[in-house]
Image (cartoon, rainbow, N blue to C red; front, side, top):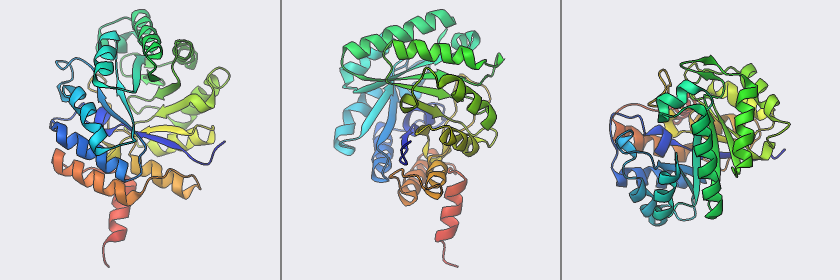
Length: 302
């Protein structure tokens, strides 16, 4: 497998969607600009969901409209939960979209007010429509290890849903540990179950650090051959519909893990420090993964 890994920073979408402070469109664009300046080549920038459900994402179209000026050449993606969201995203100029399908009945009900069968069909429909429109696609399988309402999820259930998303046109399958409950052994078991039918080069993982296992799970995925990851600068994040979901795996922690393991990300810790410092200023609270605190201490004169 390649010695380079691809990191999609999700802080402008997954990171900001659950924050008490609502960032302005210009502040979001500045965060994206700083991420690109740090070497991040792929960013999930917004979500075309109901503004009533997630008011922090109400300016998704404006964020997309401003990207060309602040982050030319960036691989940007947006979340679209259904055909209506896809239509809005296409109108706003989206080039890549993602759907999110939860692996349990209850999580789908709480998240999008649909049962699992309906949510699966809607995701398939959205992927096919995006493919027909010439738009790149990703498909998240949320609560892929454990659901906050139903507990542990069988790998076979997750893989079956992933296979349907792949068949519907998803170019990348993202196994999401939405509440940060997975252990390295559990994640490894899921990836082993997926390996026969989900190509490794089209497999990504989306990790949260609720129990402090984020980096350990990233290492388990790397050992399994995964080279595509979601992470969030400063560890910003948390799903508004998943009780107990803490911040995402910090991009800087993943970058440091990769660097010290001989893997290339193309991302600088110094650049991430600037992006996180800006987010701290905007959100009014300290942020940053474990490695950023180490990096900042190392830079201080003795």
